[in-house]
Image (cartoon, rainbow, N blue to C red):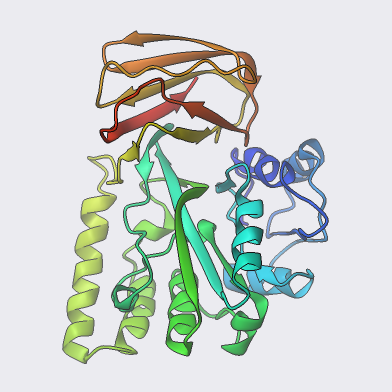
Length: 327
């Protein structure tokens, strides 16, 4: 990580809540801001390795962290990404159930300007589309160490596309992928997020990946498409595009990605009549104001904590959740 982030405490808490003896965590930061150490101590997370100070970039830091941690399955989080409750157990189960699996990934919820706006719009099942664009949300992706080492590890020279490059090389190598519709992580987007960059360096990295499987003409078209997509998705005058949440008379999960505990959650549904079922383990009161369901929990939901909510409806139709906001 770079400078201290106000989301770091929630990030650490989201990992600490599900950490067990099989989980080995490394934290690397170019900053020695004392607030980072304070957040580590407050979260209760147990680190197998830590390093503060200059490095050769994010990719090199990821490789360094993996090198100093034991474990068969590898992943990384940025300082403003979070794991939803049960994510690591879901991942362990997926690999245990399929010993031949090399890469497992799921969905991510997305927040922008303090509001969860839906799901990551690019995530799709593995296939040739990976040759043209990144279809995997990095914080929700996990790969076996053996598979990553077999293709030469993460590329330390990349600064924008190290994740897409890694998935693409694994795909070309013939690694076995599987995915789930479950939300495994939460990602915070900004208008200046690194993914939104159309700098010459990022476009050059994208071009290198595209060129592996495409003609020069198709590569140029692909880079042009990336520029158009970023301008339309992350334009400063509009909210970035995201997929709406959907559910079929089932439970859904919302994580507190903020810096502070909160008792209040506002969810906007496409259907104005939606209510939640009462839950003996999660006490709350609710009211509907226009198309917004206002929920007040009896106890504050801590940063990095996930709440599981169940819709009180007997309909079989697809129900659409538009947005959610804490506080």
